[in-house]
Amino acid sequence: MTAKEYSTVVFMGLYRRPGNILMTIAGVVLILGGFKLIPLYTTDPYLEIFIGLYFLLFPLIVTWRFLRQFRSTQRLEDEISYTFSEAGVKVRTPASEGEYPWPQFLKRKELGKFLILYYDKNIGTYIDKTQLTAAQLEFIRSKVRGR
Image (tube, rainbow, N blue to C red; front, top):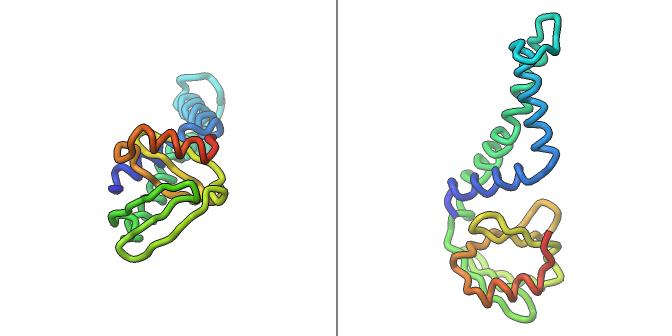
């Protein structure tokens, strides 16, 4: 997975959350009100413009923080191979090898060309769906519930 692909997946994931969508809309309203395009304020609304910009840029800020973390962990860009069986998933990287039983995955999420299998609420493994056959993808979907 490249840094660009990772940032796209993170950004798409953020904008699928209703709270982030509402925050962005609130940011636009605060900014438009601050510039008197929407009559909301009678005084100088500098604080509201600042808060509106923060709300508007919040997904970009979060994506940038995740991208910095991604770039600092070189192993994330290594080639990873997956072997799927009835027992679970075998993950092999140049540095390690591990086996994860299906019940260990809490959920799966499909964003663009990636399938994310979550170990816990926030941590998961990213699998490129274009590298999977249709039968493999259906098999994984049958083993891990979707969101």
